[in-house]
Length: 338
Ligand code: NAP
Image (cartoon, rainbow, N blue to C red):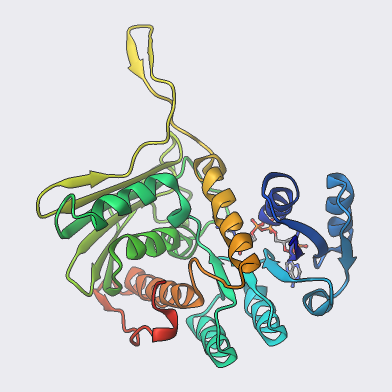
């Protein structure tokens, strides 16, 4: 069976995902697209040479008889409306992060999906599909370092634009760490604190950069994440898990090691898209394969909801300078890991 996909939002990641589904992955084709900017949607369809119908209305696309599953890649504030509409139509939906821009919006989706009675939503958190993180999780789950006690992590970008604000260090950047570290530990967060070290002279006036986020999990694991988005030298993701009997580190992306000009060196990536390019392919292929097999897996609406609640506490901690509690209801059995 070939899965017929409808895509809402033909901006940067929407175009990447359309390209993936059309030319890189197997088992799916894009048959419908929509964007608030219809001319752009038409141009994307024509530039890629795909036989997809351009819809003026996203809800019409969702309800179209020949659309089996939906990708939501429009801007964040529109996600909740489209995911709820897909659930009403009983269609599987892959939604780029954020699932919704408020925790309540995410909870509305969780409630709608549970009322529907089976999982329809996969959230576009791609880190759990990265080979390096999977190897790290296998080491932890295999007991290779004993119980995890601490995580030291870093998320560094070379630089960010004018529009990037202090709270985006949480909502746009840390959000991926919140998801992947919770997944690595199979644990959830109970408190957050944010510390601002000396500000980098390379950061624009309105932005506090770097930041250190301190998280505590229900089992007492302590996590420090450095978020430094004007580090100048590259896009660099670090993760070191300290366990009772050893330490496991996220592997570096592979690159040729050079002995040259009296130096031993490896390249560091600069573009975030290159760092997780394979993970994006694997996550979407997993969505397609699962839907064809009659189910939906991967990061769930519950994961989207808990990430939003955690991010809200981190933003509150940025503002208060205090340790902020993170209060989450118990995970419903509906969302127990497969
Ligand atoms: P983008 O380039 O701005 O694309 C968003 C597109 O959606 C634009 O074409 C926009 O049109 C369109 N749009 C806005 N409102 C819409 C609506 N109501 N109905 C239909 N289309 C609408 O942004 P992007 O970088 O692709 O990001 C899209 C989403 O993916 C964001 O939520 C972002 O956080 C997420 N994302 C995730 C990752 C990841 O690592 N998982 C990476 C990148 C992006 P206009 O430009 O005319 O407003």
